[in-house]
Length: 260
Image (tube, rainbow, N blue to C red):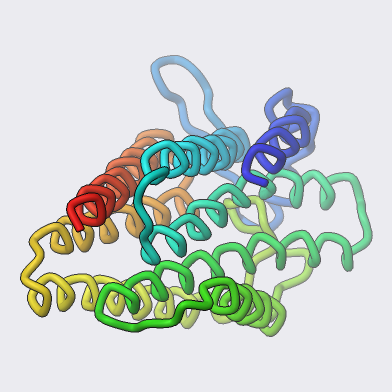
């Protein structure tokens, strides 16, 4: 799925990268920015599009690394983290949302595409939270049922979020209403994830969970930067934090369960 989304996102992003999409909608929404960098002009639509595609590439590489490293070990935490990695890959569809809007597609179709990406974000955050619950001792052998419940809850969150039709963010998506509340909920969920992994390290006496907590914090911060920012250096920082944080999570959990 990550490979398919990345390939689809790449081809759907070509009009923006080629400058064939009018950014008038972003300008009207006050979400268009331009930066002169080393005598090269960089505008926010292209920078955001590249970041979205790199998010899709990260998802492919991260899931491939999980496949390669967890052939002989089993981890409920990694099972749910994999869904989080897949959800980040859905960010590659953000340019498609704006291309639909720029080409005058029906508002209903634009909103559906926006909610699909938002559902991915919510599901990914919930999946990582579920992974942290397993770390602190939650047991349920029916992992598929738990994953299905998370998916339904993530979709429900995306459906109930109000959207400002015709108003677009720098992220190339329709601007959600109550943005401050959504950010607050994301921060609370992130803090709960960190608290669970830190508690797991002290309750079990296993130091790797402290590294996992650090990696989770870095990955969540990196994802937040990729989703909300457009400046090239900030996006590179976000991608770096996401990559390093994910590597810490996967490698430490793999080492822990291999030892077990």
